[in-house]
Image (cartoon, rainbow, N blue to C red; front, side, top):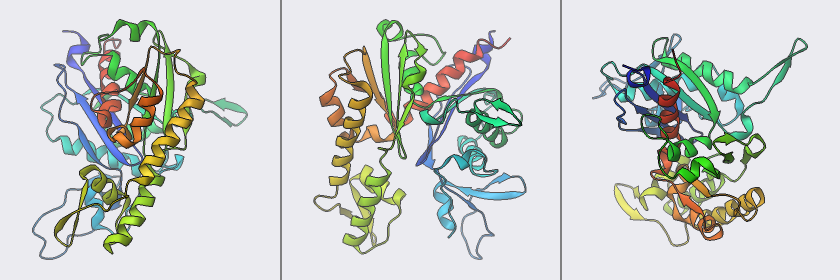
Length: 344
């Protein structure tokens, strides 16, 4: 039996707004994706009288709540900068929380992990004692992922630019084999990840990454979400977090004082404006876009038509990928399955 068959593909995407994790097991079956807010907090002792025991994960000698459970603490942590890569607990706790949410994996956990960074964070170097140290952020993320997963789960860890995950989701099947439109593999394609903090772009030419195309743009959705959060908090006279605002947008309604209420008229104007800003920045990056066989659009922001409609109208060859919020980790996991075949 080949190693490709016996190793799973792991695709953790520790985003700035949400953690998304896809595992494709050794039989090529995708497990139910894990999605939860990218927040942590040190766990405290349960209050007397609590009816449930909130799950925790241990990093070093400290236990942490992750995701929605972190709201139990008044000191939630969400890290957006590059310091998240070297923090001893933030990414390890989120990664451990992801694996715990999958439950018992029936021996199918061990595999090849592929994860990613904002495009502009990749391939950066620094000088140490007069010598150039390359790929510092890729190494830092790899170390953080291994710390969260433990010693026995990842046979190999590879870190790539996030928007490449979209391309691999379209190009590969669950066993890592080339599939889909051959023109995608033989031509020039672009991908754009509509993320929380940044929008990231990349280009591939006959499957080779065009390094100069790896770019991060400051047009992520967080500013629009923060503006909407302020408007909704004032309108409903109820303080809301960015995550609660995000959930309300996705649902199209919000629960206030035990009642499910519609969002007020005009609440989405910041999103509409952000959609226009995104297409303007993509036009700067891609020009007419006619040089590409296809432009792939994905990421959590790609689930909202207000954010994607201007781009789809501008570029006739642009498409929103299937299940856009989890497309990048799916691409990671599929690439992980492909890389497993190279392990001997």
